[in-house]
Amino acid sequence: MGSKVLPGNHPESIRLAAEIIRSGGLVAFPTETVYGLGCDAVNPEAAAKVFEAKQRPAFDPLIVHLADQSMVETVAKHIPPTAIVLMDAFWPGPLTLILPKQPGVPDLVTAGLPTVAVRVPDHPVAQALIRESGTPIAAPSANPFGYVSPTTAQHVSDGLGDRVDLILDGGPCPVGVESTIVSLTGATPQLLRPGSLSLETIQSVIGPVDRAASAVEAMHAPGQSARHYATRTPVTILSAPGAWPVFRGGERRGLLAMSEPCELAGRFHAVEVLSPSGDLREAARHLFAALRRLDASGLDRIYSEPCEETGLGRAIMDRLRRCATSL
Image 1 (cartoon, one colour):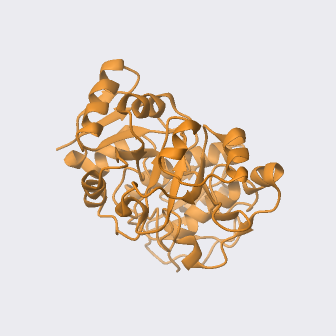
Image 2 (cartoon, helix red, strand yellow; image 1 turned 90 degrees about the horizontal axis):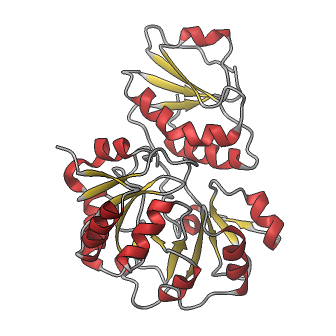
């Protein structure tokens, strides 16, 4: 049995969705990155429903989504100057900032941490829902914990079914990879999760940004489990494009190709091309949907080509590594 799905661009859909949020229910909605599973961010009982629906461990904090920059002070008690520079430059957009939290933000939303993850999504449906709800909305990706993130309303329905009260359908997500997460709680900004906003672009605005030195530091950000965004079918990342391993006899194998594959692609039972021209933005937009299609193809293993780890390629490889298993 699936959830009720309504068009996200209809005012009556937004009104109903906002009522559900205010009453402590769950609404899945599109952002420019992926679909989120939203609840009232200051309602701990509603947040508990999110964790239950996703089967998400309580140590993994949620991102709080805001309608605009003016709402930040409702959930963050200190906003450093660097945060304002980043907000002015990249909000609305795929940048999440880690800031010291206000006491009113439930510990369940922040995984007991003294910080809160916040962003302003760049999607008209998300913006309309937050404004109509009149409250910040806490939302992880709208999928079972650890599985490939959803980039369409159908992905949400397939994964969560009637565990969601309502799904707002806003079409495919235009970016398709989660937001970049930067912590501003230390002396120097720190990248906790690479995402669709590149590290290079951020540094062009605020200067040097440190990388998380350990998994413990990275766990202050949402979605940082060692195995995350995972398909049920094992995934192996090739050492280089065209660097084929010795295939097992009788293996049903699929290929996730960054661009048009070479002639050896005929040795695969299913092939997904992320971008025929090799454009990383197009590849990121198609990544999760392509992984889902391969995962549904009855394969024994998925082989993925790597891409260069600069710009958006850093986020793509981060997601693939969290998805992958070794040979």
